[in-house]
Length: 191
Image 1 (cartoon, rainbow, N blue to C red):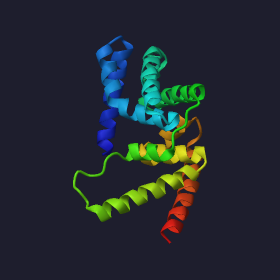
Image 2 (image 1 turned 60 degrees about the horizontal axis):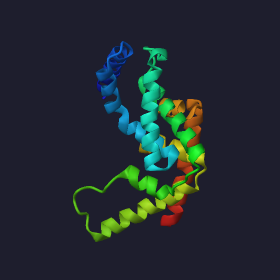
Image 3 (image 1 turned 120 degrees about the vertical axis):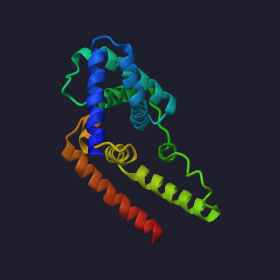
Image 4 (image 1 turned 180 degrees about the vertical axis):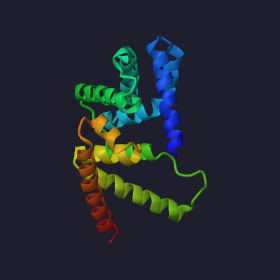
């Protein structure tokens, strides 16, 4: 896994260098590679699929325009996701839209496995998902964002910090407090 990550970073660096020299195909490969995580990051902030898609696309355009200022020794993903997050925050501020968290969690988790688990298992899974969505909705916004970025989108603490514009220690403490609160609420609901 570590070797795959190193190879991916090297591939990204090569694509970025080519894109900085004007190779639009290389930048297109970067867009393809990161469009899902960019959309999910924007969606976390916008809470609206159409706005998130627009924010991600606009962020890719802004990142392309700013390629000349990108440091080749810096990691691409946090830099890009910071642009995505800023664009999404701007769109959310201007739109003033808010969607219920349960819809967001349902879209992040995606469809259940292809196998039919049976009605009892499906009901139990739906109840667990609903309980988790309700518990997430009760978290304050900074803690909720950290949990979704860290655990639903699988970003590292450093990447979360870059996206949110805070220190990695802040991400760690928010995640710890949020998980403790979620654990307590879910245990109380099961109790």
